[in-house]
Image: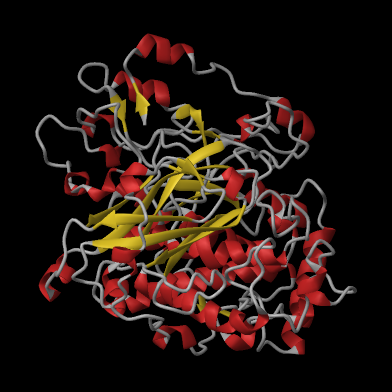
Length: 590
């Protein structure tokens, strides 16, 4: 959050001129800075504490709509863009110490190679985009030709011939064309590698991962990538394939991507994971899964990420991220689990994990787009599973967030989250396949276990903070027990693991188990498995502090532990435990 405790001092920190170093590199493009939108006469004042935390959404008052409260500013009417900060500040000089607003489009002229934020050494990668002469507010065109996205394992030779040709043409575009293959790969790099300042708070870097913008940003990214490919081959119905790794028939790397003479091939993949090896959705190089356990584990992982742990929309999408929020407030279930595992499993078998195994380079592997097409498909499926329950946030802090992309005509456009909610309205649909994980509710190894009462483990509040360099078992007290069906419908019981401090340059993973007696860390196909935290490396290194929430209501029902006063929680480091610190564990009800 950006605090105006000293307006004159704040203004002194804002540069008065635009950086021009990129215009020398790309003379055909000149950037136009995003501007403040909305009618200033309608902006009202409100008071916000500068002591705001990133994780306040467990409290009901954080959900209050302040639009009609006297003396308060509807923060949803204020969109801080680069160049609009002076105007916005002038509106709130009296009783407004801070502004919360949706994240806004970055200023491309301030994109830099930058320095590693931990080591302060120059980065050896430049993912800054070309600059443009103007920005157009993008409006979704009428759907005249619906694009069809097939399951990668079911698409035929004719489809792949078309796909390969499209990628060949993309790679053949001039190097400074924003639609060029490497330029498109750099789009992901720039938005995820802490390359941009946040518009409205230059002290914070922009990061669209590990927060509630993960799904909509990547949907826009694939949307334009797909339209570029379609235009190059003259096919308005062309759709990207989805790597169907949530289905047993699609859990191997799609064969067409492994042919060395194909434009879909990438040499920087793990050579030991070529077909017929199954993708491990709990992958860790240091703690490999037994081949016989990969399939049942994968189905359990998918059930947990799509059903068990996402009763609340926050847990599927990830933590709130607005102007002033530090990077990585908290990832959703799929993002931190199967999504990360597929990246790490596919990438080069080195600590840096290139290409798919490192966020800065992942867009250089064509399979990235098939992988994320499946992630996007899972978003569509999850929304369908919600029925009449809330499917999306209604806050403008989410809906009005905007980003910049180049469209199929090399035009720089501004897009908003609110236009991503229905994939059909964006002009594409997915091939329907079975969902074997949907009915794969895991069963417990031990029903009504007494392990919490007999383990002798210490109370959680006496242990943390600590480094996760070994398995940690703690007892966590449940504030409420023996909850009725009505209680469970009103409130979800959640295990919160907070203060997870990691260096973004490292691959890390740990798994979480509840009342587990067997201690078989590679067996996840059981009700005792609660979930995981993982991340793949970033090129830019920064220490972040984040958290995860794991659903307990259904899990405790399955374990027969609803009447227990305490539960035994096991944190099992799978990779990079020396680089993980945990601040605490607690149970909440939301």
